[in-house]
Amino acid sequence: MSSTAGSLDRDDLTPEGQVALEHLLFRLADDEFVHAERLTEWQIFAPTLESDLSLANIAQDEFGHARLWYDLLQELGYTEAECVWERPPEEWTHSVLVERPFDEGDWADTVVRSYLYDVAERVRLEALVDTSYAPLADRVGKALDEESYHREHAQNWLKRLTANPDSKERVQGALDDLFGPAITLFAPGEYEDAIVEAGFRTATVEEMRTEWIDTVSTFLTSLDLIVPNTPSPAMHVPNADTLADLDAHGRDGSHTDAWFDLYEDFTATYRELDPDTPARLRSEVSK
Image 1 (tube, one colour):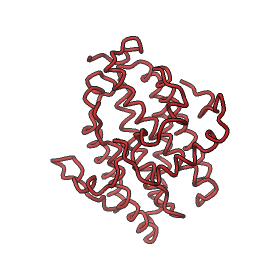
Image 2 (image 1 turned 180 degrees about the vertical axis):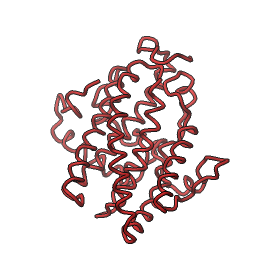
Image 3 (image 1 turned 90 degrees about the horizontal axis):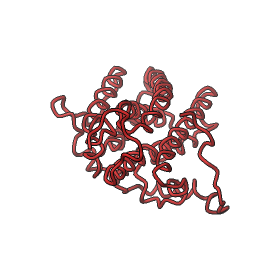
């Protein structure tokens, strides 16, 4: 099923096409939701008031983006409880990058993680601009606009931190630690061929990963940082050891123990109150 940009609506989906679309949407939504959950842990602990407010705004944006994608899943027949509050933790498909706890008090960890994630989001969203699924196309622009601010915030902090030898060393340590998990943002799934064939996304995982590696490597090396396990220009694939050394990928449902603890935390109120109509992530989101 190949289609032109924005030509499909829900009624046009084949059963196989809907499964592939759901797979794509859950990955997008889960990444945003879990990333936002982690960012909220820095509230009142960021090094400056400005950064505290910026992180609060970024987390709110990411929850809003998760809302965009979960809303599309609800249009396909899911309920919000099935998407978030009652979905078993092993069924979530977010990258292990976003579920990792922050190193306590390590602002470099937060900045590096945010940068790697925000560049990946830009690459992934740009591959959706000409999506064949009209309801998805209607929402991509809003998310892209907001992600540019997130990326700028992270880049500015990276420039600031790498200007000082001590903080630069912490940035390099965070980069060494996070680069492997960040690659899992582009780990392929079983429906990748169907997603591209249907035109839901206009780039393959390999193409997006190549662009991401080129972008982050160029910027980080300009700051005199060493990007670990950078592939050769001819290959444009991550060093196999980068992924092989990871205990979990996230995309395939394998997660770290930290994820299950986080899941218990953010679903605790829902389980305790058992509301008939749980609070939505955000009550209204402009489309």
